[in-house]
Length: 122
Image (cartoon, rainbow, N blue to C red; front, side, top):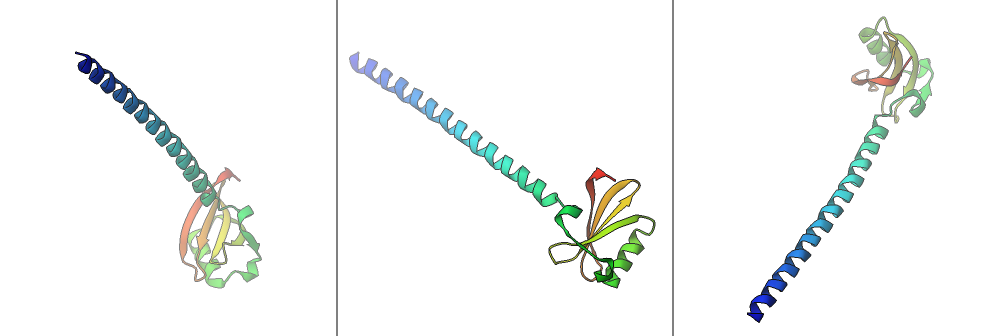
């Protein structure tokens, strides 16, 4: 009978410790998950920032003819504001289309890489 009581106490104590361990593991996992998600969200916001302030402006005469022609063919009626050099790996055309600020990224040869809508209306 005493051994049964001792076994019962040991099992309950071990069960409680396992439960507490599981709670601690879950809390640790959730803490790490929140930190990782916050990091991913902030890095994604930083990587999407492709505005005129983040690119060095370039004079129009320094933009290759193929790049300017490619932009003009794709967006003939839009209002070009500035050209900028993105990481020395291409050019960004910052323009307004239907009162919305946009950026088009082109390679040195005039191929479109991507077009983005800027965060604020122009």
